[in-house]
Amino acid sequence: MKKNGFTTIELLVCFIVISAISVSMFGVVMHYKESQQVESIRSDLLTYKYNLTKTIQDDLIKIGVESVTYNQLTSITFTFKDHTTKTLSVDRDQYLIHYGDTDYPLPNIDGLEIDQGTYFLIEPVDTTTFVTIRIPFVHPDLENRDYALFIVHPYTNTL
Image (tube, rainbow, N blue to C red; front, side):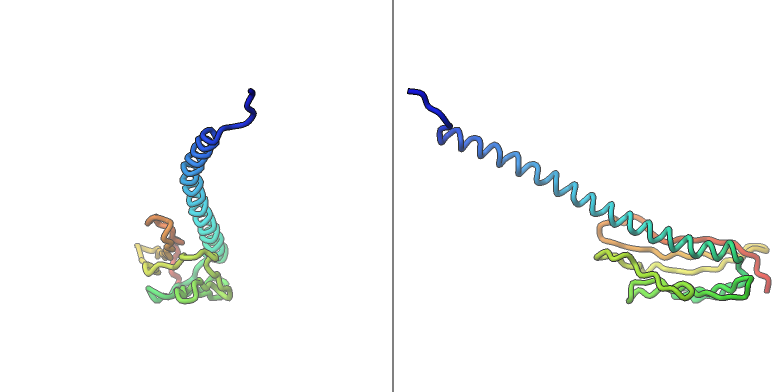
């Protein structure tokens, strides 16, 4: 007599093999998903930093800085050569950076914050003054990498 089909043992062995393969692939898929999520956070943050840095540096370079006043931890005000002023300030509670008349909210990423290490610094060196702006960002998934908006700009104080 010819038997068509599988025996119960054969079906059970196939089910166990498929289950083992599925469990081992689950770890690989989860690792890939986590890596993709971290890369997405990193990409969004770098785009945000690039756009904000470009906006600030365009003003610093194209208009030119006449003078700078600052509060080391909260804000810095630029007076430009065309006699306009713009203030750069950080609001950690609202998750935004304010520059001029525009608010730049942080990208909508859970866990992303502006770090306490924000500072504005003015350092005179000979006839040139250097303005340093550092606004670091932190996220639990970025593994202590330094993601900060960082600008150093020289200018000659005319006052």
